[in-house]
Image (cartoon, rainbow over all chains, first blue to last red; front, side):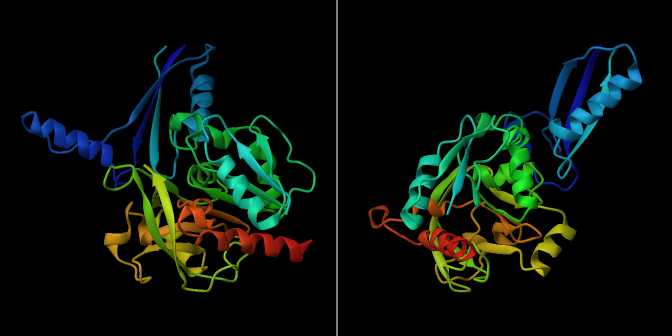
Length: 80
Length: 233
Protein backbone atom coordinates (compact mmCIF):
# COMPACT_ATOMS: atom_id res chain seq x y z
CA UNK A 1 0.00 0.00 0.00
CA UNK A 2 1.04 3.59 -0.47
CA UNK A 3 0.89 5.98 2.40
CA UNK A 4 1.93 9.49 3.28
CA UNK A 5 3.11 10.78 6.64
CA UNK A 6 3.15 14.55 7.05
CA UNK A 7 5.16 16.03 9.90
CA UNK A 8 4.58 19.63 10.94
CA UNK A 9 5.90 21.82 13.73
CA UNK A 10 3.54 22.35 16.64
CA UNK A 11 1.95 25.76 16.99
CA UNK A 12 4.16 28.13 18.92
CA UNK A 13 7.43 26.38 18.07
CA UNK A 14 9.73 28.87 16.40
CA UNK A 15 10.47 27.92 12.78
CA UNK A 16 13.46 29.91 11.52
CA UNK A 17 13.46 28.04 8.19
CA UNK A 18 9.80 28.85 7.62
CA UNK A 19 10.55 32.48 8.45
CA UNK A 20 13.39 32.59 5.91
CA UNK A 21 11.15 31.08 3.22
CA UNK A 22 8.40 33.53 4.13
CA UNK A 23 10.84 36.40 3.68
CA UNK A 24 12.02 35.04 0.32
CA UNK A 25 8.45 34.65 -0.94
CA UNK A 26 7.64 38.19 0.10
CA UNK A 27 10.75 39.51 -1.63
CA UNK A 28 9.65 37.69 -4.81
CA UNK A 29 6.58 39.89 -4.70
CA UNK A 30 4.12 37.05 -4.30
CA UNK A 31 0.93 38.63 -3.04
CA UNK A 32 -0.77 37.85 0.20
CA UNK A 33 1.82 35.64 1.94
CA UNK A 34 0.97 35.94 5.62
CA UNK A 35 3.19 33.23 7.09
CA UNK A 36 5.06 30.02 6.18
CA UNK A 37 5.74 26.97 8.35
CA UNK A 38 8.03 24.29 6.97
CA UNK A 39 7.30 20.60 7.45
CA UNK A 40 8.26 17.20 6.02
CA UNK A 41 6.44 14.68 3.86
CA UNK A 42 7.31 10.96 3.80
CA UNK A 43 5.87 8.88 0.95
CA UNK A 44 6.01 5.30 2.09
CA UNK A 45 5.27 2.00 0.43
CA UNK A 46 4.32 -0.62 2.95
CA UNK A 47 3.26 -4.25 2.67
CA UNK A 48 -0.19 -5.27 3.85
CA UNK A 49 -3.82 -4.98 2.84
CA UNK A 50 -5.43 -4.10 6.13
CA UNK A 51 -5.70 -0.31 6.25
CA UNK A 52 -6.04 -0.18 10.02
CA UNK A 53 -2.93 -2.33 10.55
CA UNK A 54 -0.93 -0.26 8.07
CA UNK A 55 -2.04 2.92 9.75
CA UNK A 56 -1.09 1.53 13.15
CA UNK A 57 2.37 0.56 11.88
CA UNK A 58 2.90 4.04 10.46
CA UNK A 59 1.78 5.67 13.68
CA UNK A 60 4.40 3.59 15.45
CA UNK A 61 6.99 4.64 12.85
CA UNK A 62 6.04 8.27 13.39
CA UNK A 63 6.17 8.09 17.17
CA UNK A 64 9.47 6.20 17.16
CA UNK A 65 11.37 8.04 14.46
CA UNK A 66 9.68 10.19 11.83
CA UNK A 67 8.44 12.85 14.24
CA UNK A 68 9.86 14.27 17.44
CA UNK A 69 6.61 14.69 19.31
CA UNK A 70 8.17 17.22 21.67
CA UNK A 71 7.97 19.78 18.86
CA UNK A 72 6.17 18.11 15.96
CA UNK A 73 2.74 16.77 15.05
CA UNK A 74 2.16 14.15 12.37
CA UNK A 75 -0.65 12.95 10.17
CA UNK A 76 -0.84 9.48 8.58
CA UNK A 77 -2.79 9.00 5.35
CA UNK A 78 -3.15 5.56 3.81
CA UNK A 79 -3.57 6.24 0.11
CA UNK A 80 -4.40 2.65 -0.92
CA UNK B 1 38.49 6.33 34.44
CA UNK B 2 37.34 3.80 31.90
CA UNK B 3 35.67 5.85 29.24
CA UNK B 4 33.84 4.68 26.13
CA UNK B 5 33.44 7.16 23.30
CA UNK B 6 30.60 6.32 20.93
CA UNK B 7 31.19 6.63 17.23
CA UNK B 8 28.45 7.03 14.65
CA UNK B 9 29.04 7.65 10.94
CA UNK B 10 29.48 11.40 10.54
CA UNK B 11 30.79 12.22 14.00
CA UNK B 12 34.13 13.98 13.87
CA UNK B 13 35.07 15.03 17.38
CA UNK B 14 35.89 11.65 18.92
CA UNK B 15 39.66 12.13 18.74
CA UNK B 16 39.58 15.51 20.46
CA UNK B 17 37.45 13.95 23.17
CA UNK B 18 39.84 11.00 23.55
CA UNK B 19 42.75 13.41 23.83
CA UNK B 20 41.05 15.47 26.54
CA UNK B 21 40.19 12.35 28.54
CA UNK B 22 43.71 10.96 28.29
CA UNK B 23 45.15 14.29 29.35
CA UNK B 24 43.31 14.29 32.66
CA UNK B 25 43.19 10.58 33.44
CA UNK B 26 46.22 9.10 31.71
CA UNK B 27 43.92 6.38 30.34
CA UNK B 28 42.96 5.75 26.76
CA UNK B 29 39.25 5.75 26.07
CA UNK B 30 37.75 2.96 23.98
CA UNK B 31 36.02 4.01 20.79
CA UNK B 32 32.77 2.07 20.49
CA UNK B 33 31.10 1.65 17.10
CA UNK B 34 27.35 2.32 16.87
CA UNK B 35 26.48 -1.23 15.84
CA UNK B 36 27.84 -2.70 19.10
CA UNK B 37 25.23 -3.97 21.52
CA UNK B 38 27.38 -3.78 24.65
CA UNK B 39 29.83 -1.37 26.23
CA UNK B 40 33.32 -2.57 27.25
CA UNK B 41 33.22 -4.24 30.68
CA UNK B 42 33.81 -1.78 33.49
CA UNK B 43 32.91 1.34 31.50
CA UNK B 44 32.33 4.15 34.00
CA UNK B 45 31.83 7.03 31.57
CA UNK B 46 30.12 7.07 28.18
CA UNK B 47 30.84 10.06 25.97
CA UNK B 48 28.80 10.93 22.91
CA UNK B 49 30.99 13.40 21.02
CA UNK B 50 30.13 16.02 18.44
CA UNK B 51 29.92 16.02 14.70
CA UNK B 52 27.19 15.39 12.20
CA UNK B 53 25.92 11.87 12.73
CA UNK B 54 24.17 10.58 9.61
CA UNK B 55 24.62 13.99 8.04
CA UNK B 56 21.96 15.44 10.35
CA UNK B 57 19.38 13.65 8.19
CA UNK B 58 15.77 13.75 9.39
CA UNK B 59 16.64 15.72 12.55
CA UNK B 60 20.00 16.23 14.27
CA UNK B 61 20.80 13.09 16.23
CA UNK B 62 17.54 11.32 15.31
CA UNK B 63 19.05 8.36 13.48
CA UNK B 64 21.98 7.87 15.87
CA UNK B 65 19.59 7.90 18.83
CA UNK B 66 18.02 4.68 17.49
CA UNK B 67 21.31 2.81 16.92
CA UNK B 68 21.88 -0.53 18.69
CA UNK B 69 24.58 0.84 21.02
CA UNK B 70 22.10 3.30 22.50
CA UNK B 71 20.28 0.47 24.29
CA UNK B 72 23.53 -0.29 26.10
CA UNK B 73 23.91 3.40 26.94
CA UNK B 74 20.36 3.47 28.24
CA UNK B 75 21.01 0.59 30.64
CA UNK B 76 24.37 2.10 31.68
CA UNK B 77 22.55 5.33 32.55
CA UNK B 78 19.73 3.49 34.30
CA UNK B 79 22.34 1.91 36.60
CA UNK B 80 23.67 5.37 37.46
CA UNK B 81 26.62 5.32 35.03
CA UNK B 82 27.86 8.70 33.84
CA UNK B 83 27.03 9.88 30.32
CA UNK B 84 28.34 13.06 28.70
CA UNK B 85 26.97 14.31 25.37
CA UNK B 86 28.59 17.27 23.65
CA UNK B 87 27.07 19.15 20.70
CA UNK B 88 25.69 16.47 18.36
CA UNK B 89 26.05 14.18 21.38
CA UNK B 90 23.62 16.42 23.30
CA UNK B 91 21.21 16.30 20.36
CA UNK B 92 21.50 12.49 20.27
CA UNK B 93 20.80 12.17 24.02
CA UNK B 94 17.69 14.37 23.65
CA UNK B 95 16.46 12.35 20.67
CA UNK B 96 17.09 9.15 22.63
CA UNK B 97 14.91 10.45 25.45
CA UNK B 98 17.80 10.38 27.95
CA UNK B 99 17.45 14.14 28.32
CA UNK B 100 14.29 16.23 27.93
CA UNK B 101 13.69 18.83 25.24
CA UNK B 102 15.16 19.37 21.81
CA UNK B 103 17.83 21.46 20.07
CA UNK B 104 16.27 23.59 17.35
CA UNK B 105 17.76 25.64 14.53
CA UNK B 106 19.63 28.66 15.92
CA UNK B 107 17.36 31.63 16.21
CA UNK B 108 19.48 33.71 13.80
CA UNK B 109 19.44 30.83 11.27
CA UNK B 110 23.24 30.83 11.10
CA UNK B 111 25.80 28.20 11.94
CA UNK B 112 27.64 29.65 14.92
CA UNK B 113 31.34 28.91 15.31
CA UNK B 114 32.99 31.01 18.02
CA UNK B 115 34.01 31.13 21.64
CA UNK B 116 31.20 31.70 24.11
CA UNK B 117 31.08 32.37 27.83
CA UNK B 118 29.30 29.98 30.14
CA UNK B 119 28.25 30.39 33.72
CA UNK B 120 28.69 27.26 35.78
CA UNK B 121 25.50 27.13 37.81
CA UNK B 122 26.52 24.38 40.22
CA UNK B 123 29.82 22.91 41.28
CA UNK B 124 28.43 19.98 43.27
CA UNK B 125 28.01 17.52 40.40
CA UNK B 126 30.51 14.99 38.96
CA UNK B 127 30.60 17.09 35.78
CA UNK B 128 31.24 20.48 37.38
CA UNK B 129 33.14 19.73 40.58
CA UNK B 130 36.29 20.97 38.84
CA UNK B 131 34.81 24.47 38.82
CA UNK B 132 33.56 27.02 41.32
CA UNK B 133 29.85 27.77 41.51
CA UNK B 134 29.05 30.76 39.28
CA UNK B 135 32.48 30.60 37.64
CA UNK B 136 32.56 31.98 34.10
CA UNK B 137 34.38 29.86 31.55
CA UNK B 138 35.20 30.41 27.89
CA UNK B 139 34.67 27.51 25.48
CA UNK B 140 33.90 27.26 21.77
CA UNK B 141 30.61 26.37 20.12
CA UNK B 142 30.16 25.12 16.56
CA UNK B 143 26.57 24.33 15.72
CA UNK B 144 23.60 25.19 13.56
CA UNK B 145 21.03 23.63 15.88
CA UNK B 146 21.75 24.55 19.46
CA UNK B 147 18.65 26.47 20.41
CA UNK B 148 17.36 24.54 23.42
CA UNK B 149 13.59 24.23 23.63
CA UNK B 150 11.28 22.33 25.94
CA UNK B 151 7.73 22.86 27.11
CA UNK B 152 7.17 25.31 29.96
CA UNK B 153 6.61 22.60 32.53
CA UNK B 154 9.87 20.83 31.63
CA UNK B 155 11.90 24.04 31.78
CA UNK B 156 10.32 24.91 35.14
CA UNK B 157 11.33 21.48 36.44
CA UNK B 158 14.89 21.81 35.09
CA UNK B 159 15.22 25.18 36.82
CA UNK B 160 13.48 24.10 40.02
CA UNK B 161 15.62 21.00 40.38
CA UNK B 162 18.87 22.80 39.60
CA UNK B 163 19.44 20.78 36.45
CA UNK B 164 20.70 23.65 34.31
CA UNK B 165 24.48 23.30 34.72
CA UNK B 166 25.69 25.74 32.08
CA UNK B 167 24.15 28.97 30.81
CA UNK B 168 25.34 31.34 28.08
CA UNK B 169 26.45 34.59 29.66
CA UNK B 170 28.57 37.68 29.02
CA UNK B 171 32.29 37.74 29.93
CA UNK B 172 31.37 38.84 33.46
CA UNK B 173 28.93 35.99 33.99
CA UNK B 174 25.78 38.05 33.51
CA UNK B 175 22.89 36.54 31.58
CA UNK B 176 22.25 38.81 28.61
CA UNK B 177 20.17 38.03 25.49
CA UNK B 178 22.97 39.48 23.36
CA UNK B 179 25.28 36.70 24.58
CA UNK B 180 22.71 33.94 24.18
CA UNK B 181 23.94 33.25 20.67
CA UNK B 182 21.52 30.56 19.57
CA UNK B 183 18.41 31.85 21.34
CA UNK B 184 18.10 28.93 23.79
CA UNK B 185 15.32 29.13 26.38
CA UNK B 186 16.67 30.62 29.62
CA UNK B 187 20.09 30.75 27.89
CA UNK B 188 20.44 27.02 28.56
CA UNK B 189 23.73 25.57 27.31
CA UNK B 190 23.83 22.32 29.29
CA UNK B 191 21.40 20.24 31.34
CA UNK B 192 21.37 17.23 33.63
CA UNK B 193 18.89 14.36 33.61
CA UNK B 194 16.66 13.74 36.58
CA UNK B 195 19.08 11.49 38.44
CA UNK B 196 22.07 13.73 37.78
CA UNK B 197 24.29 11.26 35.90
CA UNK B 198 23.64 12.34 32.30
CA UNK B 199 24.85 15.73 31.04
CA UNK B 200 24.21 17.20 27.61
CA UNK B 201 25.83 20.46 26.51
CA UNK B 202 26.22 22.30 23.21
CA UNK B 203 29.66 23.94 23.78
CA UNK B 204 32.90 21.98 23.34
CA UNK B 205 34.93 21.84 26.58
CA UNK B 206 37.32 19.39 24.89
CA UNK B 207 38.45 22.22 22.62
CA UNK B 208 39.91 24.19 25.51
CA UNK B 209 42.06 21.81 27.49
CA UNK B 210 45.69 22.61 26.55
CA UNK B 211 47.73 25.80 26.53
CA UNK B 212 48.33 25.46 22.80
CA UNK B 213 44.58 25.83 22.28
CA UNK B 214 44.77 29.33 23.74
CA UNK B 215 42.57 28.54 26.72
CA UNK B 216 42.18 25.72 29.22
CA UNK B 217 38.77 26.58 30.66
CA UNK B 218 37.27 23.31 29.43
CA UNK B 219 39.73 21.21 31.38
CA UNK B 220 37.87 21.58 34.67
CA UNK B 221 35.03 19.45 33.39
CA UNK B 222 37.31 16.52 32.55
CA UNK B 223 39.46 16.92 35.67
CA UNK B 224 36.31 16.95 37.77
CA UNK B 225 35.07 13.78 36.10
CA UNK B 226 38.43 12.04 36.48
CA UNK B 227 38.60 12.98 40.15
CA UNK B 228 35.04 11.84 40.77
CA UNK B 229 35.65 8.48 39.11
CA UNK B 230 38.94 7.97 40.94
CA UNK B 231 37.19 8.49 44.29
CA UNK B 232 34.33 6.23 43.25
CA UNK B 233 36.68 3.42 42.19
